[in-house]
Image 1: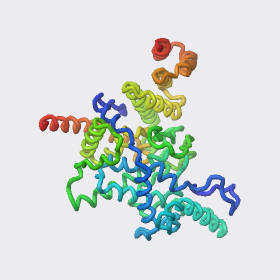
Image 2: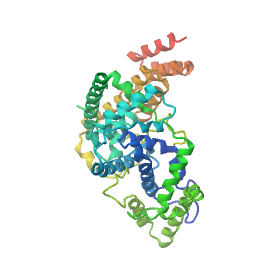
Image 3: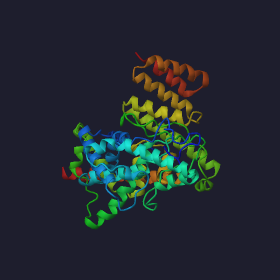
Image 4: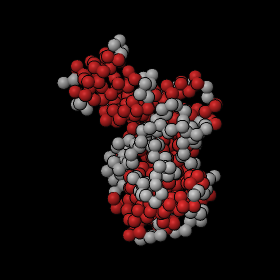
Length: 186
Length: 249
């Protein structure tokens, strides 16, 4: 899959050829779509960005190291695409914190309660800055161990810990604030 | 300090509820794949890295064959590389193929291997994608020079290692508290994988035993308690684990 090993005879098909793109796509498209949502991409842009992520994944597939878990690897692409999109979108509109209800189309079998929890969390996540949000999502939602988080995002482990700690504190504060607002409007 | 404060219970519950990844329907996947295949087939402004030219078929048939085509294209590229005798150069270009927009893509290639067995194994959570690829559990062998590594002293590293271990067990423990024993067990397996001889083995095994009991897998739980007793005859967690098995119906 990545650099061919030297013991392969030239012209002979390797026993386990390159990763099948379709397989990667089918196995992980749900993850990528959900990750984009968690990173603040709203539903109407999500399909486009899912494609964009996989175009890049397709291009980079040969460099994927099969010894490494795939999700953090994909996450890095999604985070980059979401970040670029956010920068562009800021020029167009300033409504990133808005998590629209259409995101529910991603989860037809979700209970209302679960959906509300998810949406509350997504709104709170939207208040974090990019770096903290990425670490939080990759570690606390995806359960990726911090060393792997650091590797996937290309940051030192200490930085990952610092961001995670700050993210947890800020997220908690944001949830409390949102809950209060909800209570007041209810 | 690299100790992480655990999240408060209600926040943890929110996080727990948001963990599950809703699986898209087959039709949605097909639709998205089609759109992606079309983009791949079209010439991209940013230049085309490895195998981008393979996806010439943009329609449904083309989409279905994309994977195969790409494989063939890669093999062909490989063969050409050999013929020209530039294998080393090719290895480089494979790396570069991922970075036509080097400044814009974070390349998730192994850069820092902070711990001897910093498990390359982590996020393939069972609940998500049954089709997930084999995530080989071996540590990245001889990960290349790691400039960032120099920054941290051995002591700091080991305390971070401990924090990471603890964080993983926190995941297991809170899953167990939520009644999600399967998830708890999965987290303990990840811990076992990454920290086979970690500092928190006893704690991990105790959680695993409780999770197994909760899942009704009492025989396995009992076997593990016995192993745990042998390894940590005076362990505090051992007693708790034993009680969990003995107390189970």
